[in-house]
Length: 264
Image 1: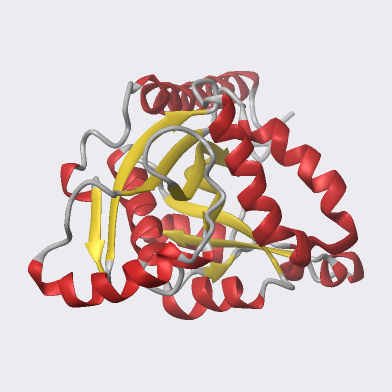
Image 2: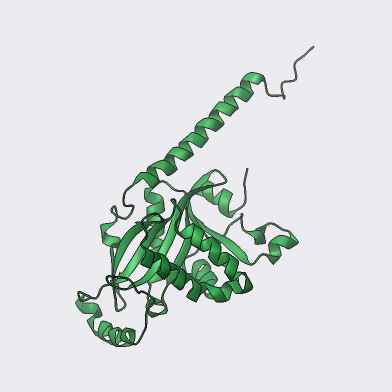
């Protein structure tokens, strides 16, 4: 009796399984290498200061396990100020989720402090004087030691549909530093960190009601609505979801999967 050549043999199945395990191990190893770095920002000395548009900020690195109690308090205060309205009645539960995410061993942070000990470059000096007057009237949220914290990013390295990505969990800025190019700077920094650590793209979740943020990512930073986002499911439940998943990919193959929807 002639063998059905269309049916995979036992040998073929074993070989495929072996390849699958090797691929998963390679992805796991990629994340381990990224997470093993003591300071992910050290490879980008040019990005450790933000001195433009009247702002003079220094950049620090932290992990969820190394946050001080005052930093934890600040993070939740700023999240509440910025996100309570977009989340609406869902905020109490979401706040609990964010408290858990905040201190996760996988959480990585870019933290921005207002540098009160030095001056900005000459080009921005005149604008700095004007902004300094305005900022003195601003009662910031930071109550800890050292220069005031005014913004932070929380991100992680993850595998999404077998694709290694840098996932931005939080991008939060105080009102006194908004609309001065800082958000763009921080997202570009995340993209650089992702590329340096062999991630294939950057992903994030944004509330639909947060229309300013949606426009910022889609129009100004050229992110796309991911194929993983509920609005792309083609179902009533997906259309009713209150959030979108956005992404920016670094190569055509990843774009086909995470943006265009050619998922395996």
